Image (tube, rainbow, N blue to C red):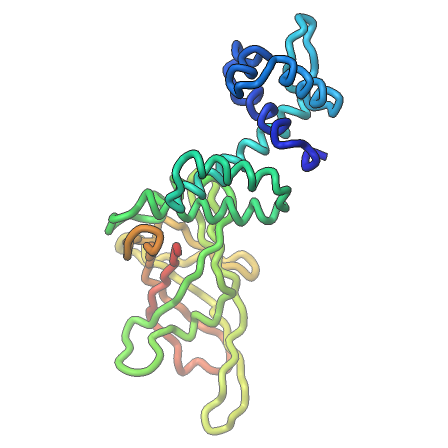
Length: 279
């Protein structure tokens, strides 16, 4: 229903949500938007008919519980879009106008979820620009609770010739998932089978990562296995930033040890490096 609201109805809804209590009046809103009090009153009347606003016994207009909930959701989306536009180096006025246009476009929840994730990536890249030594816990302290998906690569440690990427890189679904709760993060990897050709026969066999250990300080610790998932704390990742501005990439790495189960175990790797990329 709210997607049928006019641009000014949305603006007034957000005004009454964010303004200081003493300024949530027709007179103050009229001054703020340089509109007549009659225009503001008519707009509030329309919001009242939609169940988004209500009159108090003192004849003041306040948002209804439904209007408050909707305004909070719209304001959060507006802030995400505005910050995203600012990270694209738009001037403040253009960023606000574009953010409002995005808000009024009626995009899906999936769109806003992607926008929220991308804004978070750009925010942490801006925060850690130029930093050469920080860990995953510091990064997660700047993220809101939720799930974030990042590409990753698992590299071999000792490679003279051939592919530097570990066979174990194919043993997990890409990307990995970073779940943040109370500013503490956990990296989740989804295991899958690795199909390999048997030498001299051409037959296809499969193997699977059965155990992964990660380095934390001077210790190698077994990652937690939860069904198809392997999980380890984000604080184990050591980050550096590479590049400049929006082209910057954050590399978060941790030494790992993997063991396999299956028919082909001759290429078991004693060590590798897991690297998560914030692009």
